[in-house]
Image (tube, rainbow, N blue to C red; front, side, top):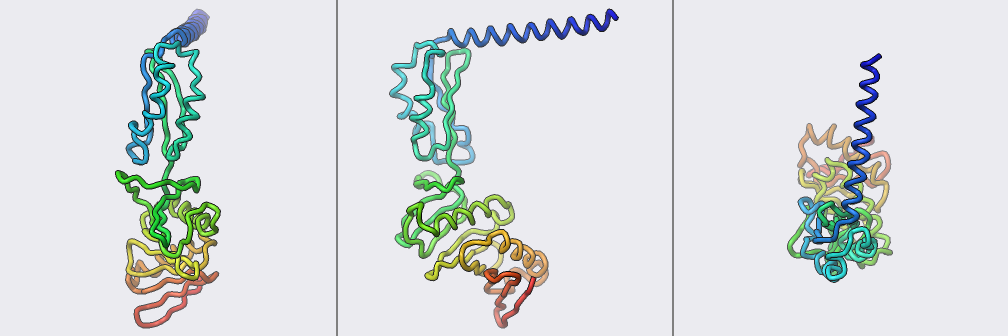
Amino acid sequence: MLKKVLIILFWVLLAGYLFFAVAFTVKKTEESLCTQIRIVVTDSAAYGFIRTADIYPLVSPFEDRLLGRPLHEINTRELEQVVRRYPPVAGAETYTTADGTLCVEVRQRIPILRVINRFQESFFLDSEGKILTPVARYTPHVPVASGYIDEKAREQEMLPALFRLGTYIRNHPFWNAQIQQIYVNEQQQLELIPRAGNHTILWGPPGDDEDKFERLEALYRNALNIQGWDTYSTINVQYRNQIVCTRRDTLMNHSL
């Protein structure tokens, strides 16, 4: 019985201590003055579209108003909105620390596909389908879509199709490692260029990506692994329920 009472007393005291410790920390933070503004680019090791130096000009106009001001009086939403309007920014959040630091945490947009249109204009599509302008200091390793791509307007039909295909490739590690280029020909049909294997994948009109990749994977697993990855010059997956492979000397039809 005594042991049970001691255990209950221990937990009550521990809960009380934690409550007062948290309350003290919150009160101390609220009473603290803003001593500095710190910018944190959370994914800078993975992506290079944004540096701290790019965000500082957006934050610096706030310094005179914020430094020396009580943290609890600062309107952080206004600062977040300014940073979020910078095109490469996917998200921005602010938080404060007990030592008076106001932290601005920034997340970058994630590129999934580089597009070079027929006018040789280059840009990226990010994981939300939005256009990203290239920066000279950073070249992400993503598949390249090129060829007869007329405009870079988001409303053009080909860009949404390329975005869906690029998203599928990015979400599947094998295809993300294997597909290096998507070519749009004059008939607005797609051709995929792999890293491994000396062949071209004739994708046909955009769409049915999952079905086409499933048939292509079956061919890779059941045929190319045995016959060799350079056996065929073209692999055509545009027709349902079959794959048409062109050898260097003959035409073969594999129905799956």
